[in-house]
Image (cartoon, rainbow, N blue to C red; front, side, top):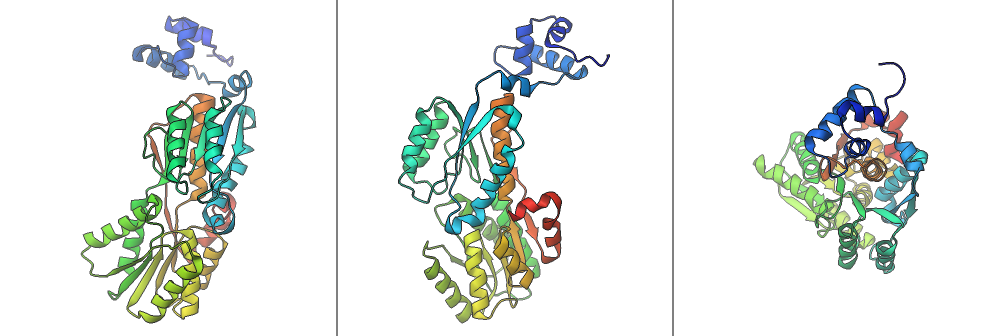
Amino acid sequence: MDDKRITIKEIALLAGVSVGTVHGALYNKPGVSRETRAKVQRIARENHYRINSTAAALKRKPKKVAVVIPTVASVNRYYFNSLWAALNNYKNTINDLNILFTEIPYYINDPLLLSELQRIQEDEEISGVIGFSGYMDQKAKELLRDIGADGKTVVLVGERDSYGTALCSVLPDYVMAGRMVGELLSRQLKDRGRILICAGDVRIASHYRVVEGFAEFWREEGLENQLVRKHYSHDAQDYYNSLFDILSKEEEISACFAVTARESILLGQALEASGRAGKLLAVGSDMFEENISFLEQGVFSNLLNKNPYMQMRGALDSMVNCLAREERPRTREIYVGTEIVFKSSLPMYKQGETERFLI
């Protein structure tokens, strides 16, 4: 074939079908048989045809996507700052796809969130929603479910779709993350003391599933360590005091693990104040300035990095591919890799592209 790009009309001639059928086959539209779709796509592939997403996007009105995730105020900054950073960086890469993002940050138990979601539901110009519903109340979660059921594209970040109306969810395998830390500590512990788990909020799946994974591995290995679960009370000072008391008074505690980012800060502070920093194995969650400092100073032996930046990046890719390229993800749950970070591996996160984990 010469350097001239093959056209849809030429593909139609080679396939013996209409131009409309070729368009439907290439853009995965309904009404084209499986055999015809495969034939058209094979001819296009063999002739190096590429769908011009940019040209198609410029011919249509802008598509709007509402991003509904918690604000970075106060303790939310540890996790959600990475999500917002991923969005801000991503917007600069899709200027030619005619997609506009509407940012709707919300607070935990935000009384204004329900009205914002109602506005999204009624706004015909909004085509999709990227959301984190873990901190929404039940009414807001149900309204987000209805938005997906009504035909808008919904992508969830950091959690599963429990209602089945979202296009997909982009998240870590939380059970596997817990198992990884369980194995890490089981291999390093020389005695069989008790393990303190800062277990997050019992109502949030991304918290309790990590704990489930840890406990599951512990049972399978037949280990006798007694797990001490301390759930977050949403009163930071009270929670810190309880961690300090446990670490100060219970000498049999030989290791500890914070499931969430905000608990990691309090655990690190309690380890320092109790004099047990560096004297027992301690694992924090996620990569941010304070946690990295704890790892460098030996307060934490490791960090569990659940890659919130890449969770958001995956959600954005899924949404844009659907709206601009009419491509649906192959699975409804897209898993982002989880990593155990050591002090020795920190330099890897401070170079080139991996700086994104420090945002």
